[in-house]
Length: 375
Ligand code: G3P
Ligand code: CA
Image 1 (cartoon, protein in one colour):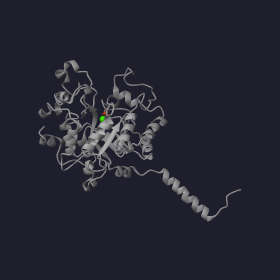
Image 2: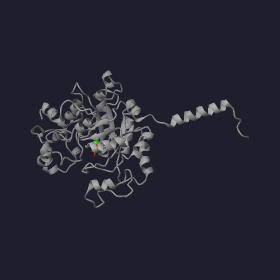
Image 3: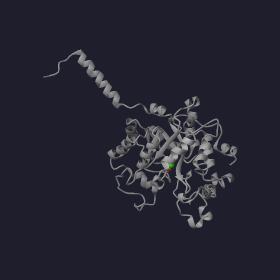
Image 4: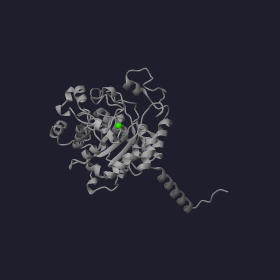
């Protein structure tokens, strides 16, 4: 028997329809970011201001802070004696003089060294040799930094307090690092969800509820981070490779026989749209508030990867109620491309450039700030 038409039934149907439509809609990215206390677009200083100063050192983090970056980004590792510190690579060769100081152990992973040993290394002089046009005598002898020391830097400028954007790097090498990180952040008062009045300004992200963002490429680590710190915003980093987002090519760079890494990655695509969506869905299911996809750089180079910031990808991610923070962009042409494609923040080695692009430049230049800090 057909349903009897009545105005009440029509009204009820419309209300239910509206309710269902509402439930499937997500807040706008700007509202999502505000809710999390994360500036939008977020300026994430990748290993500090690492174009202008040696990555992951006090010079790079102090400069990023003083320029006005929203977050100090770091790759977290743990020393042999249990101290959390920042280093990107899994060994010390590229960014320190380990080959001179510990020739027998130069290929050892960083976690085979105690913090006292790590502190004997020069983590600045390599930069002067690699980039003579940006070299400074004050960079020579810079030290590897503990998480405690980076927190001190984040808290050290009364005019601007950036947040911390912390990656668990190769977490399978550091069982329990998620718990250790929680303990440290708690001890230092960085897990309180309360924000100060100052935190209402985006210039005080380090005092607001988005003061810490946790990031990882590793699904297991995301789950452990969420278990340890359920209220802290988390980002699942996205990457195309076998075992991560499966590439259409089925190839990994290392076994591809190619020599041009940027060209290889520029050609990589997810094996199909559903594969990309599965990773976004997973991030959401596991409590992440966003994703951190790779980007292809116009100029190519070491940090140019697969283009996972295509407009449809960002749209899908937003449709799931998640933010998009892309890595790692340094040039205005790429800032514009990423912003036009809909990203909500960017990792950058060149905080000064990105802040200028966003019309948020500090009053002083990078050179002036480095000199003011004694470098
Ligand atoms: O954390 C994501 C971003 O930093 C890019 O990756 O290799 O530089 O840590 P990576
Ligand atoms: Ca990182």
